[in-house]
Amino acid sequence: MRIARRFASPSLSFGWRRLSQPASAKRIGGLKEKTDSTQRNPLQSFRTEAGGCKQDASEGLRRAAPAPVEATDATFLGTLLLLAALALVGCDRAANPPRKDIASDGLRKVTLQLNWYPEMEHGGFYAAKALGYYEDEGLDVQIAPAGNNSSIVPRLVASQQAEFGIVDADQLLMARQEGANLTALAAPLQHSPRCIMVHAESGIDRLEDLKNVTLAMNQSLAFAAFLEKQVPLEGVTVVPYNGVGLFVNDPKYAMQAYSFSEPFVAKQEGADPKLLMVSELGFDPYVGILATSDALAKKDPELVEKMRRASVRGWQAYFDDPEPAHKLIAAANDTMTPEVLEFGDQELRKLALPEGMPLQNLGKMDRERWEMLAAQLGDLGLIDAAKVDLDAAVWPQSLTGALAE
Image 1: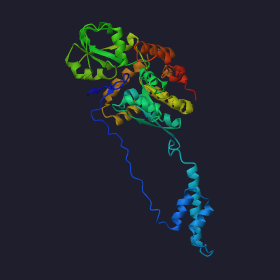
Image 2: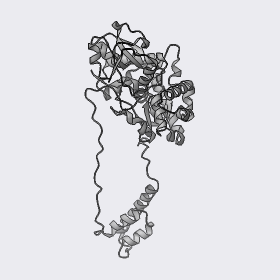
Image 3: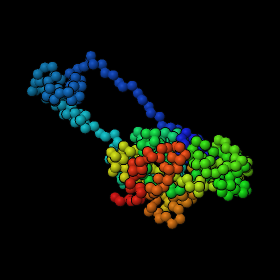
């Protein structure tokens, strides 16, 4: 199995690369059928004018019948009365068209835009769908993979082309500075999976000890800028990320990784990786958070809270029993084998439920951590920290973790 990374945005997370990517859904369009208005009989004229609500039913009847209707012509009169009734129904539907965001079963249709192909880091959202938690809240949630175009997620959500999306905290703050105003709703992971992977035999035990190696790292990412500022990197040659293959074959090779991703592949290839967590340096943004647009949060806070509540319930259920979610993930992404999912699940638990944290606090965020992140990004010159509006950037209920009905 190979892994690909997303480099289009300076804060995108990692994910497994599909060996055979799923076919994207295509929109099929067609030309509208034209009507020859020069060849209409009286009944066609009636449907066009009365059905279009341009006149009342009695006027439609007069125009539809070129000659007086005989009382004995019951069949023709009945037909006209039926058409008049249908015309009135059409007028009512035109005045009150069916809502496109309401499914036939009465559920509110919304889209959750993922930041990559479906995988274990999305487990709680798939659990909420599998277990009916979204339906319990009156929602019909369509989960849309982003493929390798995860950089578009903030724009899609901010413009409400997707009601909800998955982004990282540093990505969200940088997007807001560019006018893509997003609101963070819940953080399934309390700690970032971002790490530098080295060989256990290298003797490198801390990031501060990282020296005299080749480091595969995307320098445009926020964590990379932080690392280069905090660590001397003596004798380190930084090269672009290029997969796990080079790591396996070179004991003096280090690389950026996610703790639930590349290490699995490295071990499968016979390497003995050691992970140096970037969070230990103090850079620990929330990763894979549920977000929506400021506009939707203001327009329909009840909808937003329903989505947050069901999603948090889903994550709680996922760590109780991941199998329902894993079935949906494997169906959507055939590279997610049982072994991959099991490895990812175990690693995610360490990040989502650090020692001593109760399950009911899953998804909760801390304002002080957001303030620290804003200051860090400001120090790196990636945002103007003075312009950060955390009251708009972070959903109030996410700071308490409350799941009140």
